[in-house]
Length: 505
Ligand code: 3NM
Ligand code: MG
Image (cartoon, rainbow, N blue to C red):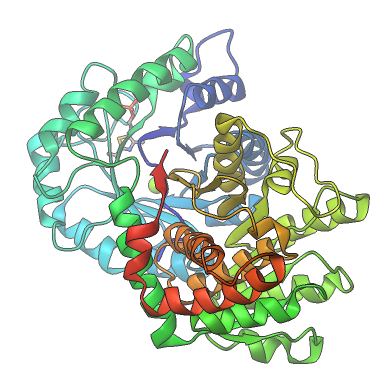
């Protein structure tokens, strides 16, 4: 179960020996990132541990800046030392089962495979992706006996059809053969997710130019074989209907540490959608609560005991419960800014759901968080860039709510146009959205992006139905009607399909 979809399309594998004269290793990597590399594997075959870790830290700084995962070749200790996003292991490296035990479920583990049997074993043992090669002879790796060529690669892909995981091909790949490789290895049922490339990027005079060209070619061919950069609106809506039913059948517990103002409304909204709220702020029972299958909702509106909130997040993450953070007023004061940084660095957050002001301020995009009310920014591109980058940087789903809501996991972006003008007239309606998102995440762990979209759709559509009720003539009656309609809508979730104003971006 992955937290988010990793973009494997243009996968850089480093090799310091290929850096042209007059260029630096880190400089080449940064230019490649500027050019659109989506994943970086640091591959150091002859570097001592100390200097390896040193380089890894420097590369991590770069990959973080560009919101791209860093994978360390072979060395789990180095990956752990720098908290890289994953490792790549070869057939003679540490076995996958042990690597998984050491790194846990959240790290990406890729495995090099040269045969269908190796692929079968790696998938069985829980690899996140496969690097299949060598497709062609290459001077970068000298000991290639017999290259797979496109037919051999296609045979391995075919063998994975009943149990597919993401794949990249490697070995002798460049701009001249990238399209042919992706399009001709497509089995009709399964295709490559990306290309792993060493020399065509590391040895390039300007890796940015090389990567822009490669990226364009790869995207074009992935479109030909039918990769969808996004789920469609229809996929997301079907998901929302089923996700709603899942809450009702599972009645997951959602533990809230929320603010004084909204606590009662949050608990009622949680009940209305079919989950079970517990509003404890007590440190003594945190561990026991986290051991129950469910979700954790943290709301920064009242920040009395930050340490307890962080401990709660950590305990839930340890138990694989999703953790949803509502960063109320996160840019408003120094204390809130510092606390937000602690949440980002000390916790493993699943979803951050804030208003436009909060999310833009988090993204450092000039948004201000004034008190707790939202100041938006009308420029859609700014919003889209902010949610996408923050999602990548923090490896979580970002939901930005406002007149239009934007939701991203760093790869996919959705926009929602539902909602009613009365929604911002009641205090804590944004907090209610976060609460409901936590309910959806608790019961729908296979895709937190679509779960978040579903949660926001549910509240915004319910708000439209509530506002249209005859007796609703202001914020007070609206507030009561909203709880009713949350209950009604989630009891007949097919209505979500009809009412949703959802866009894929
Ligand atoms: N692994 P280039 S081939 C690092 O077959 C590596 O597993 C391979 O380099 C495998 O992109 C290879 O320069 C080198 O051809 C690929
Ligand atoms: Mg290796």
